[in-house]
Image (cartoon, rainbow, N blue to C red; front, side, top):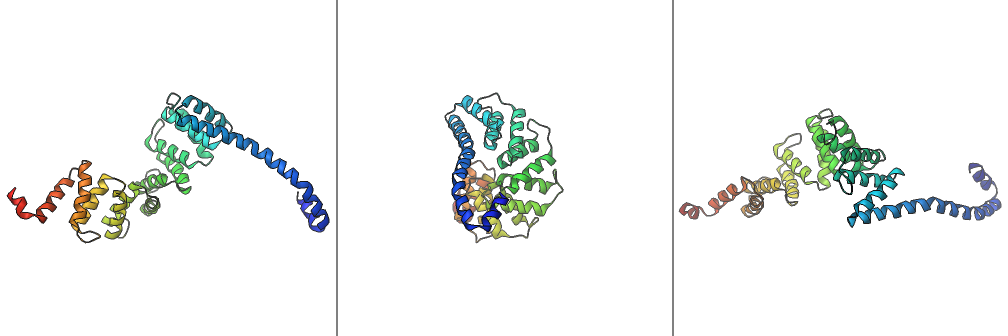
Length: 273
């Protein structure tokens, strides 16, 4: 190939003739390369369709076939099916086997799921260090849930050397990708001034994002912050709105603060009751 390029560079006429002869050869080579890829994609799509229609045995068979051929997406899906017991008896050992294959091949979802199994000791001996390694890979690939869970490990020094600043950095990454738990936890850090400079406005903004996802704790905290005027002016109407949402979900203290606001807004009425 390199000798051919050098020859073409020395003789433009030869270059023109050679290009004309090579084009059909290149086209045939591309076709030969793409045919198995297309066939694998068709098989993969059939597996997905089978899964969606709850024909799990067919999906399992197709994904197994592709997994043996090294298809990373099929390996991940096969692991999920063993993990969830779809179309096959639940088998954590098999799930770990195929999660590992897919994880080694760079699938961030597999890296994350494998990390959680080691993190919680689910079907395998608990190992925070191994969990952290797989979380790191998935986090570097941009997996937002891995970024959040890895932040927890760095915060507590589990499987890694304790590093609160690294934990904050990971929480910020996950929060920007709309992970409610990350938004809420980061809000608490800004509220307390723990490992970050205390900032009520940032706390309010992050907590509101988490609350808007329906997180009960965030709804309560947001209502409390409006009640106290933390990060914004006191706003009893906003406070009651969010406290009511938390109350409806069963928060044990939210109703008490609604009563406190009512007593401020209508003291004589409350006294009469």
